[in-house]
Amino acid sequence: MNTRYLYFIIIFIVLLQACANKKSDVKTLHFWAMGAEGEYIQKLVPEFERRNPGIKVKVQMIPWTAAQEKLITAYASDNAPDLFQLGNTWIPQFAALNAIEELSNFVNSSVSIKKENYYEGVWQTNVLDDKLYGIPWYIETRLLFYRPDVLEAVGYNNPPKTWDELIDCSRKIKKYFGNEEKYPIYIPTNEWVPFIVFGMQAGSNILKYNNSYGNFGGKEFKEGFKFLMKFYDEKLTPSGISQVPNIYQAFKEKYINMYISGPWNIIEFKKTMTGIDSLNWMTAPLPGYKNEYPGLSLAGGASLVVYKKSKLKKEAWKFIEYLSEPSVQVKFFNYLFDLPSVKSAWEDSSIKYNRYISAFRTQFENVTPTPQIPEWEQIAFSKVQQYAEISSKKAMTIDKALLNLDKDVNLILEKRRYILSKQKEDKHEK
Image (cartoon, rainbow, N blue to C red; front, side, top):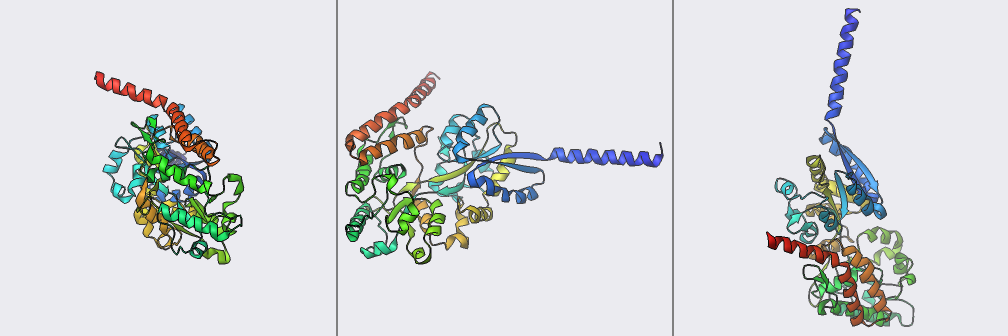
């Protein structure tokens, strides 16, 4: 063989091997994100990969409706992604499965991610038994959407700040519209959040004895529940969800004039409330129990978690740190309107001077997690909503409804009590 050709063949083989080695050095990080977040997060990946040439991020978009089941199936088959998004009420379930990594050591050695960078109530949604399992990614809470023109017409130049003002304002709006079929506020019974929020505002811890029994029949929750039932009794809210097929159109037509909801509705209200109506809707922190303002609300949103058995935990943490940078959070906000979890990101002009978001910033100073147990969503969606509907229709007295609610919740929590008792026995034996 010609010496020159042999030389080129050797060089080619060496270069090919070098390319193969370089490719093998690249680590592929698998990340599952839900809904629209799974689509838009991919716009942020190229910059991360540019900064970290040894890491590739493969994003898989999962529909929210299938996400929980798909993640559990992936965990059971030991095929979960290295990093994934969790609604923060799901964290207790995946922590109980031992499916997600405890992140305190990562935070302790991190320059950019620190507890003080986040709203306290939101951070706590990720903490179970003093262990940190997730980092807040984007955040949500509930507050009051209202029509300032209608409130001003009945003497409220500012939105209600207390329970007394809320019901007084509602009664005046009802009187203002007279015989017209219009309602001051909308409190749908297929949304459990207002019932939990007002119970917590009155001082209820919702569950008792280490979250192993229901406490809905307690005087605090009952006070909040009774207060909301006044709105049904006095026809201050539509009694059935079928009466309000389109919340935004109902707001436009003054069919309803106040509504407790979250930041995802800002975009929808802006689409509907156009022209002169663009001046006739606004957001405000929730009214509070007695003199508390803003009133307590719930800490919601999504967190980033690392799979317990991932072999790329350090790489996953790098990606979490990147997504937690204020500038990256602002970019993500501008894509999707997801509110940033990092407080300093709120100083960006696109957020700081947004007239509809200002109230959320105030509200996040007084938010709290829901009970941090795997059974919570079953309790909230299947039971709290059920008995709110029953009570609103007067099919059962409030006392009996809450008694039955506690009974049903206690059945749901039976397994939890058994596990807690076994843990207590094991600890005693040791």
